[in-house]
View 1 (cartoon, helix red, strand yellow):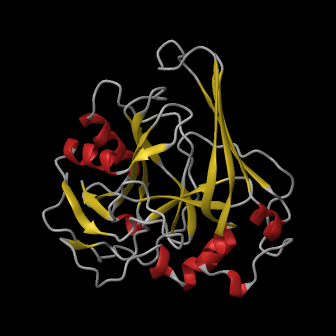
View 2 (tube, rainbow, N blue to C red; view 1 turned 120 degrees about the vertical axis):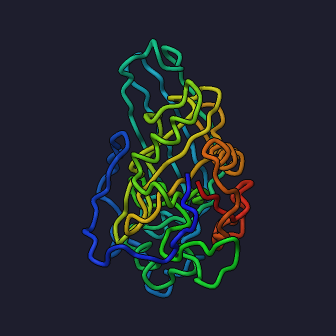
Length: 307
């Protein structure tokens, strides 16, 4: 539920402690040798740290292995650009989640699913992203103060979230919901869950996603979904406590069948907005396209709803 009048630019503290990255379910990145360093083989020099220089194309293979006690989801991303920049042609994202009560979740006892698709993304090491954020904030992470809408999107709140893997970070999806009444991620997850149906929960099987907040990479601190795993699909939102604890930030989407890819941002945004009696398309965040590539972010319209 929302305040009557958002105080978009008020910062409650200028000396906030730097937060450590918190995992919603505890991540385990697959070891693939030494990590990519900004000074490593093929690392981009200063002139290449423009956003367009982060683009990679290739292939991504996603595999879900369901066992009676746990689920392992592995994504293998391959690209010639990775080889040119970092000396490795493949990066891996992997997560294993325990099944504490397999009879109660919505998974089969055992199964394997795999899919392959093209990979076209913005990808770089954490240090390279941070350099970009600090020098070109308005082109990627933040919104100019002068953007007009029902209300200006708060200029210090990130507009996108990233996927971390064994080598770096891939820009993954848009922020599409903000709460200015409940800034704490855990509290906001409970509020959304309380408005959902019987299968809604705050402990979904998921990949963690990261956002660059207050100079730190922060993994989503809470989550909410319309099913624990959603074998046939689900509504799923990842949640962060925003900068200066002024906003709760949500990246929500509709998942397809396991092993899950987002099929809609707008439908999930509208579903949660309606559940929370929020205001649709309240902020113009101008994040409807994948930066630099110009590819649309599915059906996201660049607006962010207030809940």
